[in-house]
Length: 104
Image 1 (cartoon, rainbow, N blue to C red):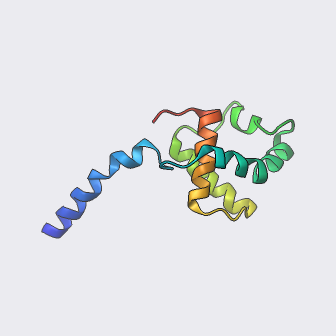
Image 2 (image 1 turned 60 degrees about the horizontal axis):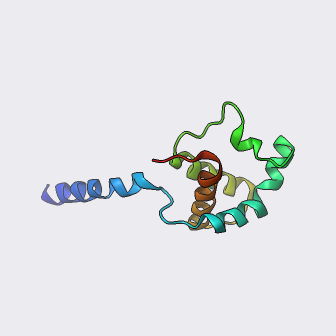
């Protein structure tokens, strides 16, 4: 029981770190390059123009930073971009910086 309490206490200490940025200190500039390479063509096909309507349309589904990261991971899988989790994080950080601007 003491071990269980210690594990639980230790996990609670790390929660504020996760809440700050689910992608940690990922580089948004690197994410921009990946986004241009793997995302834009699909978004143009779906929405026309430069594809940015994907992020600015009415009824968009993103409401948190974690939503962005999860959607980025899903798109990575869907289009077989081949990104590792740290690369997904870079794209998520870029999208938040340019389009969503979620603070917490």
